[in-house]
Image 1 (cartoon, rainbow, N blue to C red):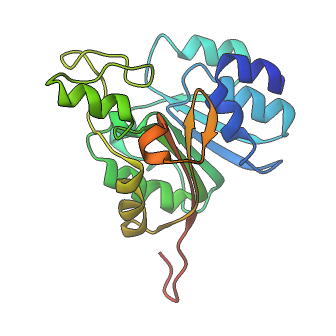
Image 2: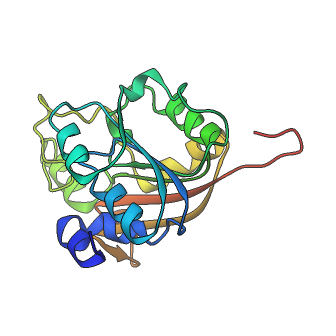
Image 3: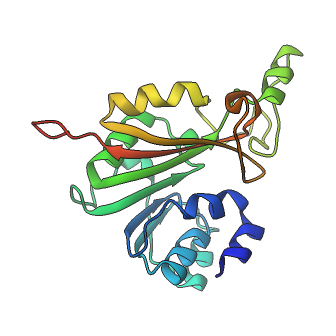
Amino acid sequence: MGALKLRELRADLAFIAHWVPEKAHVLDLGCGDGAMLEYLHGIKQCTGYGVEIDDDKIPGCASRGVPVIQQDLEKGLTLFADNSFDTVLCLSALQMMKNVEELLRDIARVGNEAIVSFPNFAYWQNRLKLLTGRMPVTEELPFQWYDTPNLRCATISDFGELANRVGLTVTDCVALHHGKPVSFLPNWRGTLAVFRLKKTLTSTGI
C-alpha cells in the first residue's frame, strides 16, 4: 500500500505514519484491518505485530499479510517483554478501554516511543451539542450514547497530565481535522488528538 492509498483510506493514519521511523519494530494496538501495518511494512520496512480483538477485522489483517494477535487489550500486554518495541501505536482505541492508565503503563513498559490518538471531546461541535442538552454524534464519535464503544472522553488538555504520570513524556501533540493538522485553537477545532510520546528516563528507570 502506498502513501496516496493510505491517505485516501485513512487520512489520519497517513499523517501519523510519518512519525514512525524506518525499520522500526512496531506494535499496533487495536490494529483494525491492518492497513497501517501493511503500509509500515511495505514502505518503511518496519517489522512487528498488530493486536486486535474484533473477529470481523482479523481476516482483513490476514489478507494484507499482517501478523496479528487476537487478544483483549484489557488483559494487558504481558505477552511482550520490557523495551521490546521501538514504537507502540494505539490509534483511536484508547477511549474504548476501561483501564486507560494501566494500558498506558504497559505501553511505556514495552515500547521506547508511543503514538496515541483519540477523539478530542473538546471539539467545538461536541461542546455545542452538549450545550443543547444532547450527547455529540460526529465523524470521530459516530455512535449514539446507548451503543457507543467509547467508554472514556478526553481532551487534548487532559491527556498530557496522565501520560506524564505513567512514565511518558509528550514530544509532539497535533490536533487533526479530516486528517490535516490544526494550528489555530487546536483544542477547539481539532476532532482527533494525536500524541507522540517518549519513555521518561530517570536515574532508577521508569
